[in-house]
Length: 315
Image (tube, rainbow, N blue to C red):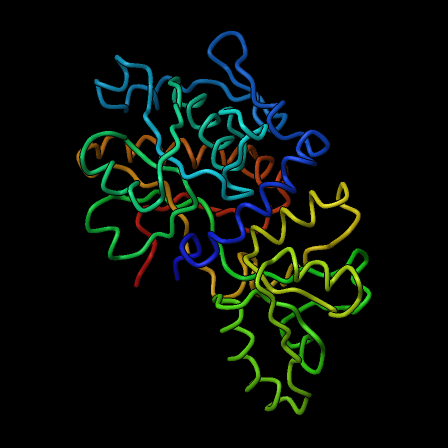
């Protein structure tokens, strides 16, 4: 499953909502350089680890910069702080600043069209990419991944969850919104069999051309839930009406979302030392709680990994 390609259409609408609420959620204003080689990300101070810095390739140590490609916007992973300006924010950007702080270098982000990211890494234009890229076997042939999240489908409900929805099974027999031509629509269709087996009614699926249209239906009470990517659902719940419009359903059986697949930092295979250093730096951010703080800032703490892995995808 490639969430980036399937759900790119929703990015503009979500980014507009993000821009309207960014300051209320603390985005873009709490990632700052600090004295003594430290950075502050999501309220957490990140200190340079000299041993990790020493693992970096000589070229990067000398330049002091890791060149990072990213495709903007794709909230909550990457966004512009203000429309029409180039300053970035988002989960990937914040994580990059934290990794840079831990490694003692700068993660310099440059916008790049998504389908050109991997070829640009292969051509040596970038050292890495942070852009909610799905780790899969095909991409592993040309880049290495340090996996930092598990991302699948999630359930968005009205504030207070009046329908008491806790799992996909609770959608059986109810009106549910979903964007047309998405993996989430396929998920709901496939779940109809489980509804029948459980002796419950079929899900009354209502499709919409845009996620924002589905959310209007949810606001008005025409549906009890909307199914969309879990990161997008978490961000909408966090940002819409300052967090007072919607709630994210967290199913303990699917913490990263339904049919979750790993997202990874893509790194040039020509720089294995960089891969190893980033993997160890990510683990350090997991261990000290910084990773959780970053994900919580964007309303998606449940998709964070508990262990920094390399090339975790198995298909």
